[in-house]
Length: 471
Image (cartoon, rainbow, N blue to C red; front, side, top):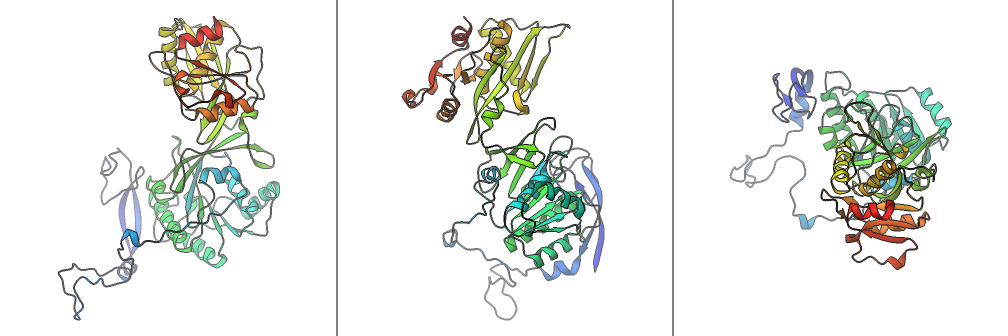
């Protein structure tokens, strides 16, 4: 018989407490416990209970001591485990394959997060229509007619895609067992509700229980499951933090809605690297893969304007050339402004202090604005050298030559430090027709300049950069 009780769950970590407390005993966050009703089936728990005994106890019936009563996995030695190669499902989306580490792993459960309207549902519906396999698309937010209208716009094979508008997890899993798809898509986890929990959909206990049921289904059936998750105003995925621990991979879909570019980042991946990212461009026919982002990001440069420099950056294993725009002007108000878009403002303040101390550039009474073109957000330390060059160019009103790019990290002493994957950065700049690249002299170890058609110029300090470009 079902038993109803009152419990308190933490919105931050999902921990359960029998009574309300001001501070969560698990994650130590304040005012995060919320009251919910929980329905538990006592008979189910008794049926699934395993009768275990210590090795010194002798069970009734004359069995040998140490024998486990009940079914379940037994402990085995690690060397007895047979590890085979997992055959991944290749999707037609090469950017998604890159982010997932080479394809979709059978039985995996992947969580997609992102702001409203960023394109999460469009991306997964586009995948369902073009993967060429039987897919069950479960939607708790849209009707079948709405999904059909989007599918007509996206194009693709609709015969292999099955739609289900349902929010009850028991019915969803039952239909999935009947259809037997090769891919299951849930849109979204916050709209599902489990009949075993007496609370509203989207609450901490519901999200945790629904995610656990989907995880058990994916592991037992071997059907890969993609889950869409809402995010909070702080940018984190809504629901308990336990949700991110349950899934095998967490992908963040981000981008400025005023721009057409979308970035798919990996926050967690049990089957691949967490440094990869995929780049898409939103148009009227859906999301288009961007295989060469450097040419798109540099297509609107003006060769005659100051305050612009190009950086050879690397995101994961992918080299990209990104344009950095800087503006230095006299402060109109008392306190000078320091504004950055797409870059860490604290690191910008550090670079300004280095410029003023090591290069003798007076910036204490100047407004400084920094922008990464294309609406991208970049945190590569190799951006430092291009940012310094753009700010010097704007302050002196001298144009940086359009065939020059930069890759280097700036230290507090004004030294230019080495960066990783310098060969890939140089090769990408050479491929796009740049004539010179400025790097740290400490990056020349093991580097063969004759392999490239671009001239490699090495620098040691910010003073040398100033003399090389603007003296």
